[in-house]
Length: 55
Image 1 (cartoon, rainbow, N blue to C red):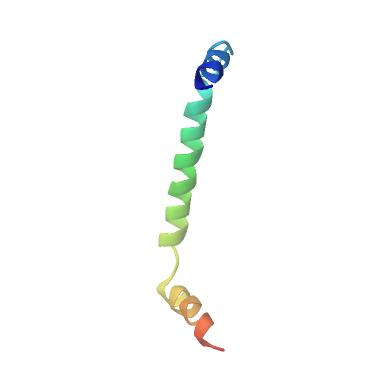
Image 2: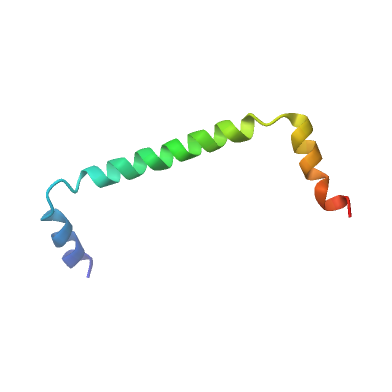
């Protein structure tokens, strides 16, 4: 089954760019996510951690 898919993918012109684009999107997403998480203020994180306990 994989051989049929591999053969079809090899016949498409320019298909080798898709894995590179996917890697760049994946890498960029996690870099931005990391910057967003590490950019949080400590007070905000402590406030959010207390939300489940406020009830």
